[in-house]
Image (cartoon, rainbow, N blue to C red; front, side, top):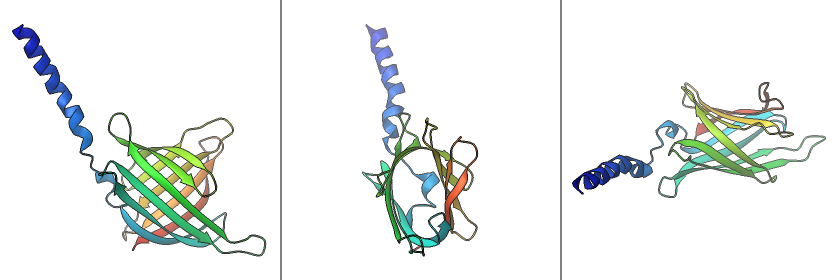
Length: 168
């Protein structure tokens, strides 16, 4: 009986750290959390906008909201783009996934990878669907470069929009 009790206590001790992982830190994101304003260019033309990254739901998710506008040109009307992205934990308690929604009806499920000064969102390759890659890179002057790219094969990416932002 004592052996079973000791075994049960030992198992409980191994499980306790797993439950304690609910205290999530966003250490890799601190340089990006906040409000940003920027300008950029790409296939929609030259434009500007804002985005925010903020913690929500008791620090269990990170929410990014973005708004950008591209003025009308001779052959294209004004473009207004709004989107929302929710960044969350995977089953291991690691911040490695996100889901994106926009006012054009797109939904993108992203995986997240980290590099020295960059956070990269990439969706998985699916038949007849482009691969999208969104990269935030911290620049030397505390500005952020944002690049959104597309690829048909998941290997050769073409920049769709790129711009630089500063914290508000």
